Length: 393
Ligand code: GLA
Picture 1 (tube, protein in one colour):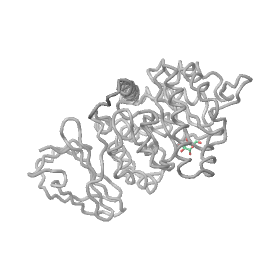
Picture 2 (spheres, rainbow, N blue to C red):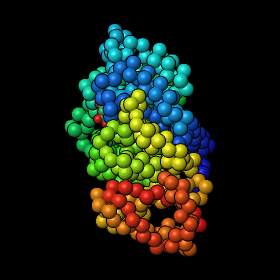
Picture 3 (spheres, helix red, strand yellow):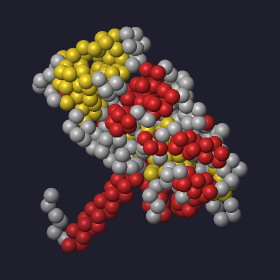
Picture 4 (cartoon, rainbow, N blue to C red):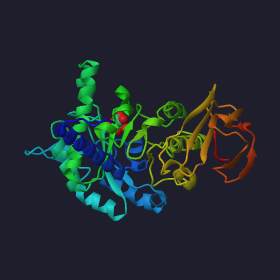
């Protein structure tokens, strides 16, 4: 790069460079790997209160989830109360003392997350942060909040009336404003953008301070919706990395709407996608299978791999898809998915992953050493299931 001649311009360039480096460092510190934790919305929606959050924190520890890496306990929408005469936000009666709740969650070795909107109202119609961004950020920091999900909602009404160019500017300014407000508190707070992927947020989410950004509308506890969202992430890998992640929404594992192989697919796909792992079930009522799947050390390690290379689709033939993720140790995680509900034979061509000789494969679920697999391999797979391999030369 050629530097400008003017000393003033050079100085300005240096300052801009430093600013960018600091912003990237701040982002990296708070979300070097995809955030892991729990969020209240998928299971509890508006039926969330102080006692329930404490119980989830207790269960996060007792179930072994904290030790597996799940640390954020995130309160979603409906905690918000009124603003006082000074404009300060207070929690409603469901949360009598947010600071005491944060202290409790922290005493368990966990972190507390909260939710707001850049619009005047949240999605559930509660008080948003519009016009009170700096004040709210300070309040969150004073309470001891470690994570903010910032959900577009009523700001979207302004966007409806705007041209696409104006909408782009409104959204970016709104997110930048809160990002700056959070930074100004001096407290490391993960900044989670929620605007459902509008305006290809993956292109600009990191530049407005997002540590993660939702790429789609809401998930539901069905195979079809989970698959639509999960497999729909194809092509987004290059936008993710340490400090800034694509977010295909929270997990539904354990909520009861999917079969075991479907939840396996959900977990495998999210791990492969380096997606945030935010459990969305009731942690106080988990079956052994749910705990085992959420805390599966191999799956968590795939998701949390230090290199932060999001996986992507390698091949698709009808409802059969092959995805792969490059791991920091040089191995590749290869996932074979059957999106139809009937038994099938799936083919994987390891040449598409740049192998030139038969590969060595280990089954990630069972740890079975499968020995050498031919470059062109076929395997049988049941409907809606996933075969997960760790592949090396
Ligand atoms: C939106 C978000 C959800 C949840 C609700 C809360 O729909 O996408 O994840 O936060 O709002 O009202």
